Amino acid sequence: MDTPDSGPLTQPSMTLRVSRDSGRRWGRQKRFYARDCEPLDTLSWPPCRCPRCRRGKP
Image (cartoon, rainbow, N blue to C red; front, side, top):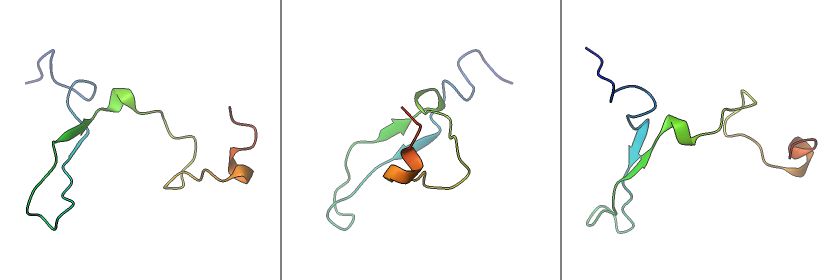
């Protein structure tokens, strides 16, 4: 059953931990939430950031 504290805006969409030494030690967990992401304006992934594709965008 859903509670007021559950859902796509309150639960992390993705969690990530990075190791820079082949898995011997891990950095702190980083959480990414849907509310912090801008909607995609293209279907290509990753979104292109070249000058030609950015033309007309702020």
